[in-house]
Length: 133
Image (cartoon, rainbow, N blue to C red; front, top):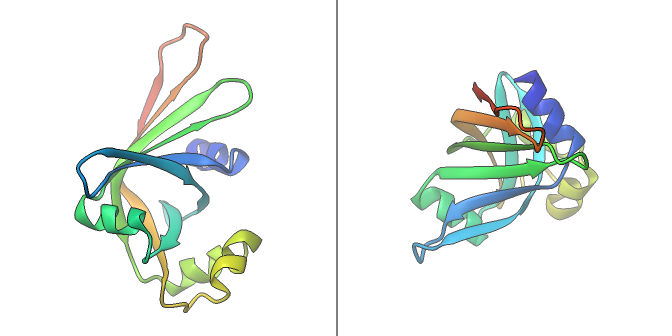
C-alpha cells in the first residue's frame, strides 16, 4: 500500500477510466487525495458525469506514469462514503479547497477504491509487479 500511495503522491495527475452512461469508455485526468486507514481516497463533484458513471458502474481503472516511464494501473470499485474526516483532509489541497471551499459543501464527494489490484510496470523487460490492496 505504501509503495502505491507514494507513487500516487509523487505523480499527482492520474487518468481515471469509467464506463460512460452511454456504455462507452471514458477517461479523464484525476487527482489522488491520500491514503487513510488502508484506503486510497479520491474526490469529485456529484454534479459531474464521472460521479453518475461511478454510481451506475463502480468498476474503475486508473493509469499513472512517472518521468522514468514506470507506471501503475489500479483497478477496483469506487465506494462513496460521507466521511467528514476524509473531506476535511482533502481540503488541505489548495486545488480542492478552491473548488469546494468547505468540507460540508453538498456537491463535494469522496470515495475510495475497494478490491483494488495494482500493477507496476516499466520498459525494463522485467515482469510487472502485482499487488492486491
